[in-house]
Each structure stands twice: as structure tokens, then as C-alpha cells.
Image (cartoon, rainbow, N blue to C red):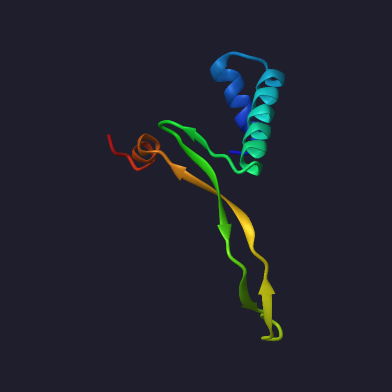
Length: 93
């Protein structure tokens, strides 16, 4: 499902216009981005938790030349599924 399909599904399920559904989804995505950028996490009970992690700097190899290169440290985004969501996806009651 892509973003447009999600917007159409939300609009139908909640009985709002696609414009309203798009605005709501965009606001949600902006809030998630801004919250994670600050280093905070978002926990949605029953669904899951969005959080940031850190990946240490490390050495890698250029696949064409085999030369060692330095890969900089960076922040990563993680999602940990909640128990209820995990059970739903895996067909458990």
C-alpha cells in the first residue's frame, strides 16, 4: 500500500474527505519526524514504539577497489512492534 492508497483507505474508514485524511497523515508524519529528531521516542500502546539509535563509526571496504574507507557514525531510526500488533501480524490470538 502506498501513501495515496493509505489516504483513500483512511478517508473511507473514518468517513472524512481525502483532503482531511492527507492533512492528518502529513501532520502525523511531521510529528514523528520532529519528535525523533529531538531524540525523543513515540510509544503507541498496542502498536509499537518509534525511537532513535546510534550506529558507531566503523571501517568498511570499497567494493570496487578493496580499499578501506571510514564510515561515519550516524543516528538510525528503529521501530519495535508492540505485543498486540506482533500477535495480530503473526496470526496469534
